[in-house]
Amino acid sequence: MNQTVSMFGVALLILTLVIAVVLGLLVGPTSPITWVLILALVAIPFVYRKMTARRFLTWRDEYSVGIESIDREHKKLLGLINQLQTAVDYATDETFEREALDAAVDYTRTHFAHEEALMEQYGYPDFAAHKAEHRKMIDKVNSLVADYESDPDKTLQEALDFLKQWLVRHINGTDKQYSSFLREKGAT
Image (cartoon, rainbow, N blue to C red; front, side, top):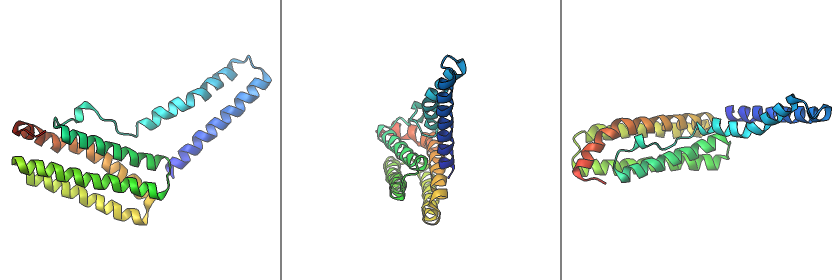
């Protein structure tokens, strides 16, 4: 609903500016106000693109844990979360939303299994705590997916916000803690 109101507001602004520009050109094409309105109209797509781009996650070097396979998986997770962001932003149909949500959740499980296998293989001393953190996150996501069935619009945004915050916090927190240990042991 929020995104719909936002898009309606942008459309209304564009329509108002177009009418003002047309009227301005009819009254006096040399008026500086008319040209300011034309510039404002031309600037709207650029400003809107900048504003919406902030909602998407972008990979940063600081997210790297220094293990190529894990970084690659984190990048893929980031892309799947951005796909979910697209579903939320553009009010796609429920099938696309559900597929985007399921893909992000399923790949998260795959990633966790790979991380846990590496930790177990190399004898990471804090393996149990890290695995418990994974389970806690999966439980929360499972709860959100169950809630999605009864209220898709509200829950999809909530799931998206949770996944975005959790991924960045997890990478920069507990994943950074195991990375140096695993790199020393030869994980790639």
